[in-house]
Picture 1: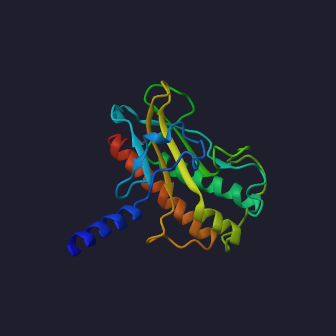
Picture 2: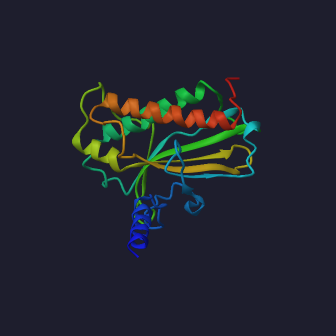
Picture 3: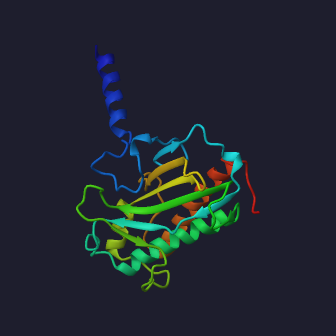
Length: 221
């Protein structure tokens, strides 16, 4: 009986430690259908969906949409300097664009063989009365230098998510989607803008490496 109780407790502890998929009241609305997501495996984003019918090797070009930040109204992140929010959007898009460009031709036309990629930093709930979307390179001052982060900016980074989807640019077929959260265990320290840029570069490199593995290691065209 004691062994059975220990086994049950271990099962409960493991279950409690597993990350749970985003719940309806928690999602930002960036993705169309969160019910498709499952828990990601090692070296994957936290929650992921891949279309089993996707013909990944037929894609060799990418149409990258401007990266966005989703917040619950313009005043919901008043504590975070707006220039910092703009820099976060800009820096992440630059990192993704740089790594994608090393493996694919970046295009503007929705043609056959093109993947359309949407990415967003989200700190909002679709159930909120007002949602505000901030776009990368949308104007405004960008925080210069590589000094320490504002305390509120650091707290925002700790709780925000990165959401994304990949579609066939011509047919709009959903190929993959995911939600990623910063993991506490073994996470890189985030105290300066240099740390942020290092984190974004690591995340973008991992994303692009997985994508190239699925498309057969396509190179620049």
